[in-house]
Structure formats: C-alpha cells, structure tokens
Image (cartoon, rainbow over all chains, first blue to last red; front, side):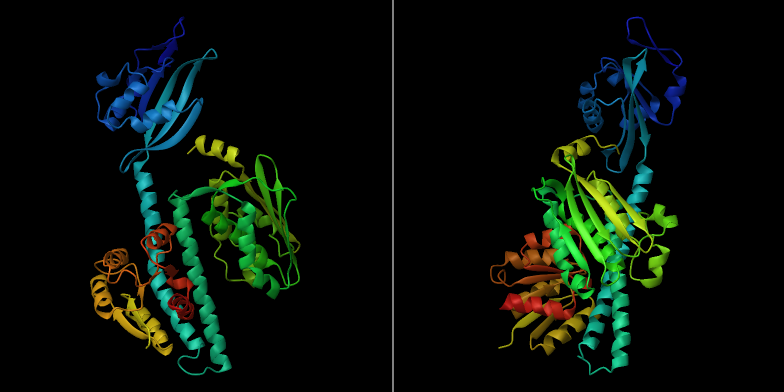
Length: 365
Length: 122
C-alpha cells in the first residue's frame, strides 16, 4: 500500500509510487480535505498539463484548468462512497471515471479517482449504430417503392386482378410490410444503443398513453373477437415523467404481443395500480404463453419463442428488447409471468416524479 | 381547373409511382429531381401543393423548405414532407420550419398520401 494514515488522520503517501505513476489508467488522489495530493503520468497526458500546476489544488480549484470542468462537476456533485461514470472530456475523448473513498479505520482519509480511456470503444459503438441507422434509412426507399407499386396493382390501377393474382400480391405486400417494420425496429434499436434514448421528458398521464394505444388497436380487438378490459383505478393516478413518444413504443410493443398471440375469443386486460413510489402496469392475456425453458431469453435482442415462430412469422424479435430498454431508461422495471398455452402477464413500473428525479441524478453509467 | 402538385423527389421510380397516382386522380403534376431544380420549379410553376423529399442531391429538402418560406411569393404554398427520415428530431424540425405535414414514405401508401393532399387542398 502506498498510502498510510498518519496519527493525525491525514493521508500519508509513501515513497513507492512508481507503480501508480506508470499505470496506463489515470490516477488522482485527493486527501480528506479534497486537496489533490497525487497525479500520475497518464493523468498529465490526458489533460495535457504538468502535475506541478495542479498538485495541492482543491477539487473546485481544478476547474480553472482547461479540460477539468466535467470532472470537477462530477466529483463535486457526489457524496457516494463509490461510483463509476462515463465522462466526455472533449470531442471523441471519453473517460470512464471511477471514484472511491479510501477508508482507514472506519474514517475517510481521501478519495481515489481512476480514469480509464474508453474513447475507442465509444467511437466504435457510435459508428456501429450510425451504420445501422444509415443502412435502415437506405432500405426505406426500395421498400417504399415496392409497397407503392404493389398498392397500385392491388388498387387495380393497372387492370383487374383475378383472385389468385390478388392473393399472391397480398402476400408480397405483407412480407414487404414486415421488412418495413423491421427497419423501424432497427432504427429504434440503433437509437437505444447510441444512448440518446430519452429525449423530451414531460409530466404526463400513463393512463392517457395506454388509452391511445388501445384506441389505435380497437378494430383488431373487434376483428379477433377478444374480450378486452382496461381496468383503471378509482382514484386518479399521479402523473409521471415520461418521454411520451418512447413510452408509446414500449406500451405498443407489449400490447401488440398480447393481441398477436392471443387466439380469437381470448381475454386481454390492462390494469393500473398506484404503488406510491411507482405506478404498476399489468398487461394480461390468455394467449399462447412462453415455454418455461425459454423464459430467460424473452428480453434478449432478436429472441422469438419456439411456439410462436410456428404460427406467426411476422415478429422481428426486437419488440420486448426495445420495451425493456425504454422502461429501464425511465427508471422502471419490467417482468412477466407466463405459462405455455395458458397466457402471459407482463408487468412494468414507472416511478412517480420524485423517484424519477432520484433515479436521474443518482444514475450510474 | 385541376390543382397542380409539384413532386420534388430524386428517386425516379418513386416519383413515377406517385405521379401516376396523382394524374389518375385528376391532378396536374410537375416534377423536380433535386433541390435546386425544386426551388426553381416552385417559382416557375406556382403549384398548389408541394411534395418534398428530404434527402436530395446537392441542396437538401430542409434547405429547399427554407428557400420556399423566405420568398413571400411562394411561402404560402403548402408543403408536405415525404421522407425516409422518421426520427422525431427530423419530424419536429420539418414541422417547425413550416411544413403542413410529415409523412414517412414506407408507412403510407400513395392512396393515403392523396387523402392527405385532398384534405389540405379543400
């Protein structure tokens, strides 16, 4: 150990700092008064600064040096013993900052900050999702052209069709629509992975959002002769902080599965419950259910259960993955109970305003 | 007199598909294949409505929209954006810049696009 506590509870740095000095990660050590007492070579390199200039400065005092601002606001804003967060220092330069209190004999005697350069990984991730976005957009022109020309044929714009011709054209049309849906899902996915997922967060009613999704599916509910019930609590639910567009996608993806995989005449219900710190939403169906041995993978990307693949080839396997990411980005949880051939119940929670605020400020990256 | 629709779209096949549908519905049409020609056509043809793609060679659709809205002689012509870009940012940007509607190509059929046009030209 290269630091020791002296009898007056201040941090004593031993003479053997060579290892710390040559680590490929940046290392900074602050004493219990938040004065900088050690920086290694890599830190000097990261911030392009000589250690003589910054040693002895307080955390706040560092903010007047170029490039330290983001790090200072991060360190000042926290009272946690340990945290890890990604921090953009400048364009294309991202550090993963790990900060932990150094505690000797139950007493804090300093803070150790480690800076790990993750720029390469982050840039690669960004390029990957940009590629997906670009490819998906490029696919939209040809799929639109196919959709439009098939529609022209089906509308009889180029002459009357016989029954067989119509049937096969309708099949092509539906297949093409599946590609269009896949492209839409891929674009949502790329957005999630770019981490810019929640954009406009406003105080809203989850009930209204669910009602909206229910309304757009009314004709399908009728067509499949499903018994549908939306159970709203008697008392008005508290409003929640939501990215409305994203929450609509999440609810739609879950509800769409219930509609799709519940046979005609089955039951579907949605219920809402006020759990004080959060609102719990339950979407229950009497559909095909998920086989037990596949339940662990339900929220994985591109997962489709074996039993549904046989009856329905439309799904993309991205719906629940996207829904889970959206719910979790809001600080909520998602889970389910399911039995094959009996049905599934999907639950998710949305924190009320106060809990959401805690979640957003105390978020670990 | 038949209403005139200007289609600014670089993809030949898509342009043809939508033009044919519009002609069949009894509209006059004008076409432009890129942003510069699009702006010029708006001035020359004075259409009743413009269908505007966003990703165009050279001047893009957003720039075309700016040029249209800057010119008081043509600024009042309704513009419907018809694009592949479906991100919320793009939609909001387009509507904020004065487009009357924003349709994602793959999610609408020509028939639905025409219903939108009819509703706007009413």
